[in-house]
Amino acid sequence: MHFLRNRIVDDARQEFHRQERTAMTSPANLPLATATAGFLAVIALSGCATTTMGASVERGEARLAEMLAGRTAGEPQSCISAYASSRLKVIDETAVVYDAGDTIYVARPDNPRSLDTKDVLVIERTGGQLCKQDVVRTVDRTLGFNTGVVFLSDFVPYR
Image 1 (cartoon, helix red, strand yellow):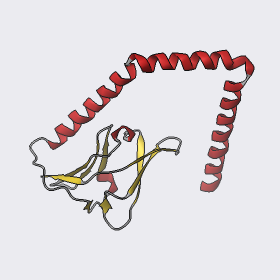
Image 2: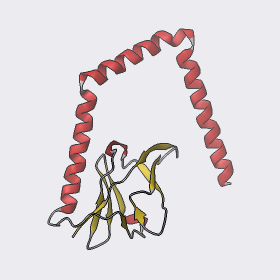
Image 3: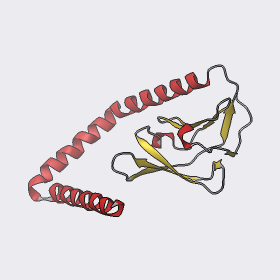
Image 4: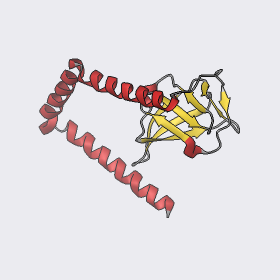
């Protein structure tokens, strides 16, 4: 049953993308595609996108600061014992946080813009612990497709 559901979703996704490519390249829609591309370029160059991203980063930093209020940073660690995945949290465009009770571990990735609470983290662990060299993929929560890869830094403990 699970295989059949995945196959149906994959077929629907492929058909959607085929129709999208056909619509955007048909002669009747070329002016629309050109106008759309021009409009998107104007928005990107106007700085609107930067302002939105900046606000998201600020919200993420504020949320992280709230979580760490009253705690002191310890020595960074390359691996931590993280058994309960439910304690692993994503702070949008900021960090991956593991709440171990008395200690909160924070790993800031090299590419924080890939972090989004709308995505699910899929971690391919190399051992029994969560380590900075583990492969962390982000997957769309609704459709199940890969949205990115996150490269973690050392985990900084806050007590």
